[in-house]
Length: 269
Ligand code: NAI
Image (cartoon, rainbow, N blue to C red; front, side, top):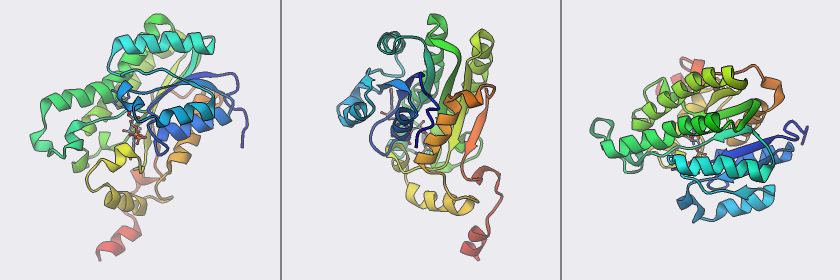
């Protein structure tokens, strides 16, 4: 159902890899709500080809960009404004990658080249995007930037290894750049801390399926789905949240404030 919440808005959506991607759902809902946007992903992700289907469905163009490359990001913002016909009103940062997780390397033995890559791609990329946009004045007044994150930034999840630190850094960039961009032209920057979600990034974590069920049991409302995460992000891109900025917003069915659920107690008794 459309309420035209994003009618007339121009956006950039990163991270739609396949139909399971959270960014994929956000793109579908943004289209439904009347937004025009550009899709982007790493050039290597283009090879999988699925993003073309999403582009057709949402009548959007694709601009390949490696989120760790300032050159690619500069091109992304310049071309997006050309294609969409003006400054950008919303940006979704939905990017995460850890070779340490992919290769199942234990936290105490992290490969530091991989570690630096995790930080660069999963966290610094947000700084780079905001910095390019800031310098080129690419974001409209009251534009909204949302980055997806996970509670591993605040709490220990042994399987999350270097992504814990990448997400902590990402959330710090949200606060710090949110301050500067708010002062500049009222641009707001927030992160949404999402429940475990069955996507390519999620499923890449060893033991994810079991953990998904535990988190579901531990949340008053159960795990929040990718679809509902998309709904939440749409509200953050809309004009109904104009004074929300520099926040880490939990979209997790109550997981983050639950000590223990009765279901969990029953499971171990
Ligand atoms: P996904 O695997 O569909 O999306 C991750 C995206 O990052 C992919 O599209 C991938 O191509 C892109 N990417 C990787 N390296 C890149 C680079 N160098 N340049 C540009 N793009 C690059 O998985 P998902 O779950 O939709 O992930 C989206 C975001 O949500 C990530 O930030 C993830 O950490 C976060 N998140 C995911 C949760 C989960 O359980 N799946 C839970 C909480 C947050």
